[in-house]
Amino acid sequence: MVIRRGRRRALVVLVPAVAGVLCAMGAAPATGLTTTAVDATCTHPVSLTFSPGLGLVARPTTFAGTGASGPCVSSQVVSATMSLSGSGTLGCFSGSASGTVRFDWVTTTGGTTSSEATVSATSAGLLGGAALAGQVTEGLFKGDSYSVAFAGNPAPLAGCLTASGLDHYSGSATFTFTRPLV
Image (cartoon, rainbow, N blue to C red; front, side, top):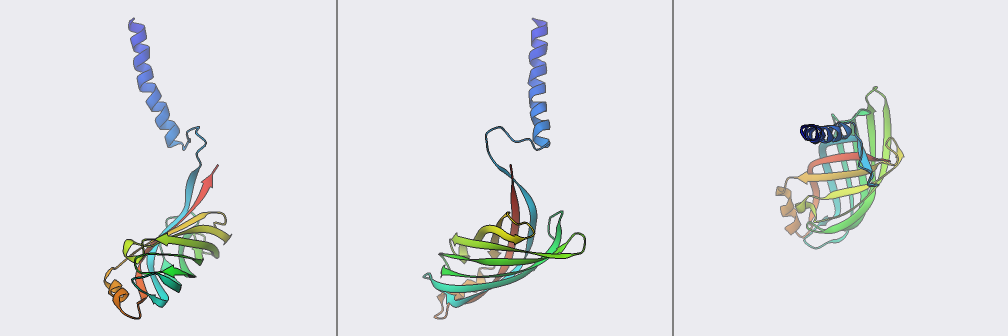
C-alpha cells in the first residue's frame, strides 16, 4: 500500500511537470488546432486622410495613410515605413473598407526589403478603434496574416459633426505579422 501511494504521488508530480516541459518546448495539443508564430510586431504613429471626410453616417469614401515604425519586435526586421490606400463605405462610427498596404523594411542585417498586403475592415468606426486584417501577398512575410489595430486621440472626432466631415486622423497603430505553424 505504501508503494502504491508513492507511485500515485510520483505521478501527481510527474504528469504536470512533463506537461509543463512540453508546453515550454512549444508542443501543441493533438487536437488538430493550428498555432501561429509572430514574425514581426511594430507600433508607431499613423496619419490617415479620408475623401470625402467621415461623417456620422457611413458613405463611400477613399482613404490613404502613412507611418513610420521602429523599433519592431522581430528577428528579421528593425523598422519600417508604411503606406496604405483603399476605399469603402465609412463613417466615424461604422463602416467597411478594403485596400492595400506596403511596408518598406530595414532588416536586422542593415539591408532593405518590402512587403505588400491586402487588407479589409469592418469596425465600429474610428471612435471604437478601427482594425484592419489581411494577407501578405508579396515580399517579406509572404503568406503571413497581417493585422493592424489603431488607437487614436478622440478629440479630432468633433470633425464628424461638421458638414465636410473628418478628413484627417492621427493616432498610434500596432502592426502584427503572423504565420501559421502546421
